[in-house]
Image (tube, rainbow, N blue to C red):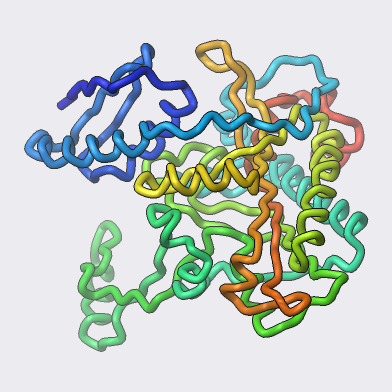
Length: 397
């Protein structure tokens, strides 16, 4: 069943994209939502027509929240690199890498890289880490678990901002008969048999949705000196994307090269400023078009306007965007491949680490490595001759 809903005003393409993406969290009976080319209405497909009234009520609230207008903040661009490679943008890159067996696509937002794709991911991660260590003396290489306490995410404000993306971890309840029932149901079955919901226990553990989060408890109770604290690592990150998963550009599980600063307000602000030329250098070594500009996170609809307003007004989020070529409307498609963020003293206050007697400030830089891989192959294609010589040797041998 399809229904058409007129919008109270025409909307911009960027908002249309956000509405389509976030609509997957409106109702399990909403199969698809598409904004009309005229940007004045939406077409909604329902998987169960009997749920029309309930879905429509949720949709009206969702659209009302998404259509709230924010002040027109001017987007600030910090740099815009251009490629030397004059070749065309490659299309269907994910499919081509699957065909070359450089990616095994497990579906549902999970992919295993192999061959040149994996070599490029390692090159990007290794190069970023080297740039961080060379520029910020005293940077410590760390490692953190992918499994985190729900209490940690609560302290980090994640449940309040992105509840739709959380991945809880459960296990079969510690009961002999329950475990035996689960075992027996799978012993002779032709397909997997999952335990019923009442047989699954959620012990308050989650898969980590933001690489920086596990680092903050390690500083609890500490006083950070004037030299500040700098850590970097490659972390595994998990964000539930529902039906939005698609190739390497929107994964449920992915890798992030993270960089965290902790110290005074001046220290973290200066460190964030000094990361900009490092991202420019990384893009330059890969010969990638790259833009860094002010942005806001995609918050859950009920709090999106308020939190986006604060982020844009304070200019605390800079987004790293890598172009993917012209879209159907002729405009350049750009993919967010990382961000450079200021947190103020939020985490210092929540996790009780200080500097100069006050809650310390923090900042972080995160690079989504699979997205950098996708963007690089999109901008250079599969002909090794189009790649910078140093990178070509690293990934093609």
